[in-house]
Length: 121
Image 1 (tube, rainbow, N blue to C red):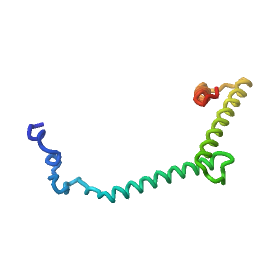
Image 2: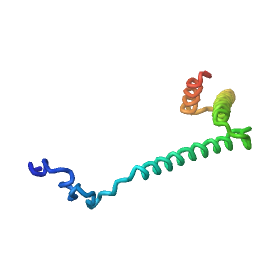
Image 3: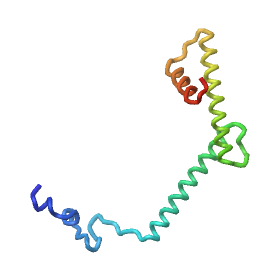
Image 4: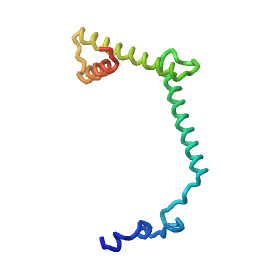
């Protein structure tokens, strides 16, 4: 790279003059009000995604259908349900092995890790 290219400003290198913001790839700057509106819209999308996630959990976790939704209650019941599912999986693996069946080690490792992380092993 020549010395003149190294010392040139970014605007000079990309062909824009930088003074009026009308370079070939430059977008106009957002006003403070536009930034605020974008932030509000983004926050509304985030909250909607959270609401939809909790609604989905109430559909998946038995006993939660049609109940008034308290996020704390939904999370607590979801954790309880997942613990029950892990215990059931453990019982099924033990039953298969008691009858002489083989359970892939990866399934048992996942179960052991999950139970250990929950303090249930």
